[in-house]
Image 1 (cartoon, one colour):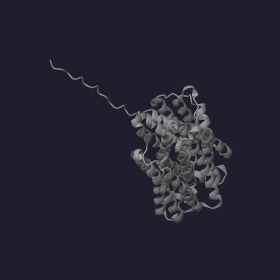
Image 2 (cartoon, one colour):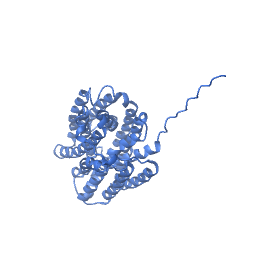
Image 3 (cartoon, helix red, strand yellow):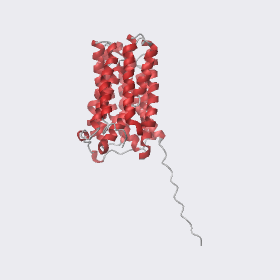
Image 4 (spheres, helix red, strand yellow):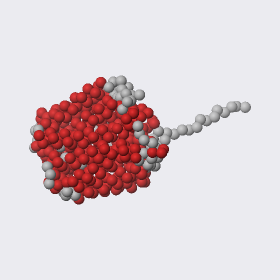
Length: 397
């Protein structure tokens, strides 16, 4: 009698939850665009509020302060909440804050609305990366992160230029009302597609300070602070910089080049981050440094300004994914705590960028902005190159 060999069970790879991840990407888009939208409409916003461009730039600063001072305590206080409920709360916060920003003619009320938006951002950023990773098995987490984080370059490549154009053709507050409508739409998308993810049992608190003792975490956080500070102080005041260079009417086009290059960067980063995280981080900082040098030397040349925007986008676009991945790798078992610290310091650096950029603009003029960026990027390169053993190793664990 012949023997039969049992047929092995057929296994199929789990289905990639693209609709849910696209909902997260759109939430990231709302978060990133709300953060950066004032950069393209500072002159009109300042005129309506009766303040200088430098003072209007503090709407970016106060947004970042809102995130920086509330991210860790609110993340701890809401640790037991379901992730879906928390994300919906953050999106509702964006809708309210953008509406108030659009209708306000009072500077202090506008600052309060931007602070609220920053609080919403602190909640959102603290959970978005982890939410994306938890939707898929470990072998798909890199791809899931790339899809979710694509909202950042999309906000820069499409959202900011379109918002800048709308603000110039119509009036500066129209893009903020459009953001309100988008936030409301995202709420419905999240409800329809995202599965619930539980919070930590019993609201377990994140031991943030202990994460700083893990080798590699401090170098990654140092690079994060300096890199974000350098980027933010130039991006916040890019409109007055281009205006003084005689390219004020081209602000939306320059931002479009920057954003499209950022899209290319995030795609390339997602494809190569697994094996080349160190090279991509160092290369990104070098590209932004070269862009700053070009802007410092040849800001009156339109072709070279566009080239600088291209290099800037290529260098910066992948930075959020690179730095979040690096701190997660370095943090190991304390990765959640390290991520919470990264969110706080990222937004503190954004606030610092608005303040430092405003001081440079007020006391030294727009021509000093690129050189300030270059000065900040030199230690970024030194730390990233030096952290070979931990933080930015040649081979990821």
